[in-house]
Amino acid sequence: MSSLLGFTDYEIRQTFDRLTGLGASSLGEDADMFGDTLEEAIQCGPRTHDLPFKLQTIDELKTLLACTDEEIARVSKALLGIDPTAEAEEPPNWGCFPSLRAFWSAVLHAFENDPEVQGAKAG
Image 1 (cartoon, rainbow, N blue to C red):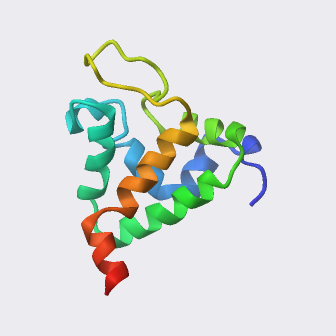
Image 2: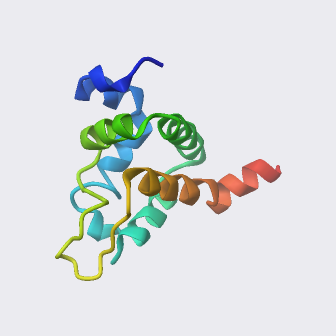
């Protein structure tokens, strides 16, 4: 894949279609509707989607995490309605991540450890 730094927001959303869906739901501007903390919002993401979506999301996350930190920042800006590295005042005790890479790694972990995904791997 060529550098994502020169991609438009539209091209990024096309490249990371499943992650775009998360940015419009559990990781979007109303992420607090999916949990009282950012970690809970992340855990909610897999529960609201079917197995093919989950598996495709895992692939997209692995692709994203293979990128540079600068590319991850560019993609995150295009996809997310929240800043997972900022200390949010509302809701209180929302939590934050030390880096965007740590945030996306937590999202990947949530999807990989989803019971339906684990069952598919075992089956």
